[in-house]
Image (cartoon, rainbow, N blue to C red):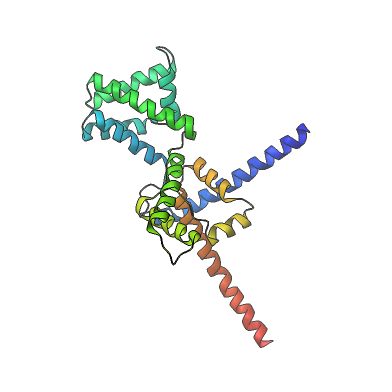
Length: 245
């Protein structure tokens, strides 16, 4: 029984690894055309929330400088900030908290505002860590689905059925907000079939890779178009041969 469980776990890990590798390849292949995506990498959204929190306690200039420095030093990760909130006065996490306070003061915050800013950052990070496993896109996706449903209800697009209306609004919100919600288009279905995966596993892989699922939608659509362009000429040529024969 244990051997079967271990074998199943190994197969699942290999599957996740292959899926992540394929998404990484697609991301690298199409990265030069990402200009329309303000948030291709989801951690950028969390960094922007950190900036907004810091700006509440200081100037825009000081907040941006501090957020940039913390990001470059890998101090903004929700998991690490949540541990700072839970620490006592000693240990690595306490030292990290003191280091962050030093960055804030150096950026121009007074000590009182620096402490308030750090406390608020840690509160937000703890909520994201506890409720969404440190993935801010999961927070946005949860509320994004509700937003989609509410807009579909309010617009009452009578010429569209519910599925068509939902796809229309999802596409709109992807474009105007880079909202991390996804469409199950034909490209997604074909990709999932070829790689023996599911949309849910695809979203989980995107989360692990820190990729916006709206961007994954676009990556799969471009992959699908290229795939069709390769296959269509072959099909057409085969048809000609058949007619001639």
